Each structure stands twice: as C-alpha cells, then as structure tokens.
Length: 362
Image (tube, rainbow, N blue to C red):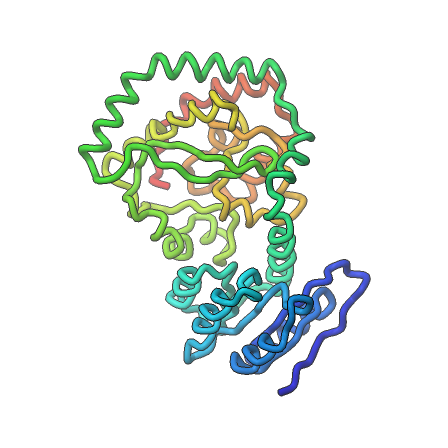
C-alpha cells in the first residue's frame, strides 16, 4: 500500500486532513487540492478502509473523499463509517466519473455531505470542502454563533411596531379564512393542516417556519431527486450545484396546494412567525438549511445580516418568473440587507399585493 500525502501549505490557513480513495479522478483532485489540504491518497476503497483503521482520535481525517466504484463498495464503506464511533463525525463527499442520477440518489439516502459528478469545477469542490469543515466546526456552537452574529443587526423600533400592527390585525381579520383553508386541506388530501420546517434567518438563527400544507406528505423524501432533475436554478447554471431550489411544475403539490401557492395563501401562517419575532413583514426570505449551506462565500452570506421577512425585493421584482436567475435573487437579497429602511419596507409592502398572484407554476 502506498499512501502519498500532499504538501501542506502552511500559508493557506486550511489545515484540513482528507482521506481520498480512487484512481480515475486522482490527478484532477491532486492538482486542485494539494495547496490547500493535507491529502492521504488511497488507490481503492479497501486501501482506504485499512488506512482509516490505523488512525487514532488525533489523526482521524476531517473529510473522507471517495470515488464511486462500479461494485458499490463506496456505499458499503459509508455505512461502516456511520457505525464507527471514531469516524461518524467525518465529512463524506463522493465523486463520480459518470453522470448517473441514481448514484446521487443513493448517496443522498445515505446522507453524505455532497456528491459531484463529472464534469465539475475543482474550484467549486475546494470551496465546498472548506465550507463543510467550517460549518462542522461551528455547528456545535450554533446558538452562540447566532448570538454573536445577531449583534450586528438590531430590529429598529419602528419596523418592529409595524410588524406587530400588521400581524395582529391580519390574524384577527383573516381568522375565518384560516378556518376555511384548514377544512379544505383536510378534505383535499391526507396529512396535517400546517407544514413546519427549519429555516435559517437573521444572523443564521434557525427557527420553526410555518405554512399551510400545499404538498403531499412525502414531499421532503422526493426533494433530493427533483432538485437534480427539475431545479430552475440548476438548469440556469448548467450544473447540479445551485444555492436555491425551485421546482418547475412540482409534482409534489396537491390540487388545492397549487391554488394556495399561486394566491400566496399558503404563506399566511407566517404571521405567527412575525408576531413572535422570528421574522419581519419585509426582509430576505429565510432559507431551508440545505439552501443556506450552499451560500458559502462572504459575498453572499451578507444576506443573513439583514432582517428575514415574509415578502421582499425579489418577490415583488420577478417572483415566479422563469428569467429570475440565482444571481439576480442573491443581489436583491444583499441590496436589501445593506439598504433596508422603513420607507423601503412601505414601498415593498405596497408592491406585494399585485405580486401575490403569479402565473408560472414554479
């Protein structure tokens, strides 16, 4: 067995250990990662298994990077890693020399951290690995981090006053509408009336986000497949790597759910989020965790330093339109985080009403 370890660039500041397995993409990986990471190369899954077996708590790798093999040994290896007390905290990323969606679906079922298939940019892989390590280090202290970051954003008194006035009055006036929608959802399909998910808002704060259920109860299980096949933003970039997920003609949506979405009535339960202070009436949309993780650079993480909101600039600008690019949405989010004011909020609120009814099914 020949374990070749790359040079460790002390000036890069990225002291990250990677255990690699595979031959097909080894040259590409070596050329792109050797200056930023400490990589131990193994020619096969069997060699990787032996290498990992010789590690201690002081030498265990931060990342396990494997090529997908024809025999599927990499998937068996992932299951063994998950069972290991020493290794189950390692970041696992798979690389495939063929573009096979079934392989990615299997990898996602095993909850790997990411999956790349040829062709991919080595710069994107390098940035993603750096982010995954950073996120792994800060995740155990996410609560402390959110408090630290949140000190850079203070909700203006006038903005909070407007939020309370709007949320309280609308909850009172729309209470009969809430009841009618709840009954219709129960009659339309099986499942709960409300859908709850974890969202990332201001200062990376994670909170429970509420909507009227507009999808089938197995919607979350279908997301991994649909996000690679029908993602509006992925098709725009020409790759599977997109920060936001927007499904065209989403088959997970129920008949009633389509009406609720087109009319934006599914968003009404977020008035409770506004009432308790999780978000504001106007701001950047709080993102699902899987989308927030994709915003790895300082350029785009700025969006989290402004208020999270029910409506915002991108909703009134191009919501539901197919020419709404990922980059345009990010720029609008960053602009609002830097320039938000009560007067801008009032303009957005006034522009929200005509934007509520969208035509495209996205």
